[in-house]
Image (cartoon, rainbow, N blue to C red; front, side, top):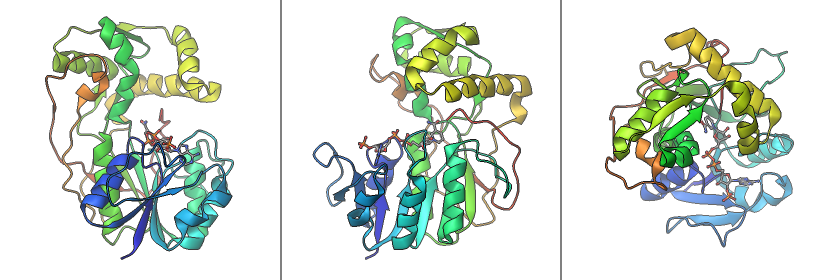
Length: 311
Ligand SMILES: NC(=O)c1ccc[n+]([C@@H]2O[C@H](COP(=O)([O-])OP(=O)(O)OC[C@H]3O[C@@H](n4cnc5c(N)ncnc54)[C@H](OP(=O)(O)O)[C@@H]3O)[C@@H](O)[C@H]2O)c1
């Protein structure tokens, strides 16, 4: 049986990818930095390796047919040798990117996702890019404030179509286990565009507690974001992207479209499960708010509008 290597198997998306592949009875290998700490489903082969140390990856890549690749950090210094090693061993790669613009040949990548996509394209191996919008789990960042009953944050009217990480994983598994996806880049979003203030209201409703939104001037938020995210360039870019989403309204970002020309569909249920955002803070009362099928659009043949991403 051909083996699929999953990177980031303990993360938000990777943990679901590993579980779904294992449940399907496929040969799954998980790349972890510390095998003693990784809690993975029975039957998953655990191999240690570090994406920041490409020379450690050989055992994990040996005899794999496909790789589910995530790039966990902001910097991509070791991306080139890692991608080369993947291409040397595997026939296919499914890369968890973000909703980024296609680059022209002479254009400099603005985000590490674009850099990874370019490196992967240049290897000549079969690739598929998953370009999700914001993860539902991002709202966990508000958990502490939700516990206090008020979320103070900038750009309450900024909206995104959040997607549940398990649904991203379902798409990844579909692509990994079926044909016809080579050279496709799939934008995947949740079912509904919600402003940040609406997200907070829904979390309040779902958890049975009153939570209000309080608009925070972007300058005040900068210090908090710096503490949370570290990278000043990223911190300065994200509020700008949120600000532009307020200015441009519903025309940006939410690009749900009919099933792609590559014929990709998924039976994954969309569960924008806001309760996850406050799991640590309050008792759960509602487990699912919406249910629909995520739909995909192949973007490899067109050049989407440049949309800054806050991922
Ligand atoms: N959040 C969003 O809204 C959003 C939207 C679009 C795209 N994305 C992209 O999604 C990716 C993150 O996915 P995620 O949220 O599922 O990940 P995550 O929860 O942040 O987990 C990161 C995973 O990578 C592993 N890891 C970290 N450093 C590593 C290293 N040096 N070598 C090998 N493995 C390492 C971690 O394993 P251990 O720590 O257990 O070793 C963990 O399994 C990023 O590229 C992000 O830009 C995010």
